[in-house]
Image (tube, rainbow, N blue to C red; front, top):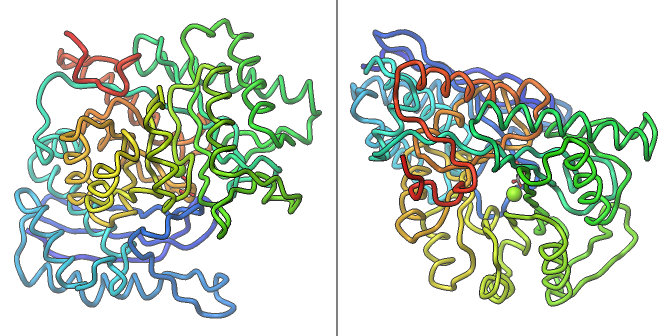
Length: 439
Ligand code: PEP
Ligand code: MG
């Protein structure tokens, strides 16, 4: 039973306020901290900000905190919900309490904090780890799947101060034999990459961006991918380590339907959708890229569908889908992509995020779990990814506490499962479709 719900304002990894929620039950106090994006999709659930001049630059979350303290919390306590068996009911009840389609009234940041803390309370009541609780919630069966970490080692776009339009260049150790080994390879490549940047651009170029990846003074995607290829080859991992890219292209989409790769330093480099498709096809031919996320803008359906006809790799919708079943349905009917990015705060409750994942799986798509660029020390998504057996996750570079807290939790989970003698498979080359793994 929920005895009390409390909320307070804390800071995220960018030093911007965020919501912390505590749900108290007879099994203890269960906390959650809410993440926040920078390259936010316009169809995402609404994050409530105070907009008070002069206080945290208008980014305080006092209203969202009060909504938990004064409205959501008392209503949940009064109804006597049991998080052990009623997470879905709790989420639905709070959605109804909000009463808007995008959680604009109470705020997705308020609602998600409650939902995550209730999930933790449910796991504690059942006496099981969070990943086990979420696995049951999602109805996932079969062996446990340890995911391939996609490590964002080069930061551009709105996540860093360099002139690279593309937001994320990721490495993925698909040839490792365990999650722990994938992290070792990733960390080694990360440090070799630092050396390559140091050699080429000097010490001032080794600073990092919002997600812990380096942000050297590169502009073109080829320059970034060449750096990655050098670091991977120097480590001797060219066979085992592949690349993923998130251009986050809604950020450089222009009203006239074209894209501007020079948007960061206002030196226009305008590409038509056809030019941009050609650029991606060139990159796919020249580099070992296995995943492409948001190559086109959130409502540029036509270009997504055209590209998807021949795209040979995982084509992930982030801003396009916003972890929303309705957007996934739209994308399916237009044959726009083949994978859904899952960010819990895009939709605002844990069970709606699980529903979106289940729907994506039912279409034969992949699901790729993601952190936000504004993160916290909460490691919820580590358990969520194992619970849903998605086969891959991105949580930034193997650097910065708010990023590595998820990766470290995943090493703990892998060790725990192995120590318990449970079948636990590393997704490896099957990261898109881990159900194809054989025991
Ligand atoms: C992303 O675009 O995938 C991302 C993690 O960035 P943000 O959280 O800024 O949306
Ligand atoms: Mg993205």
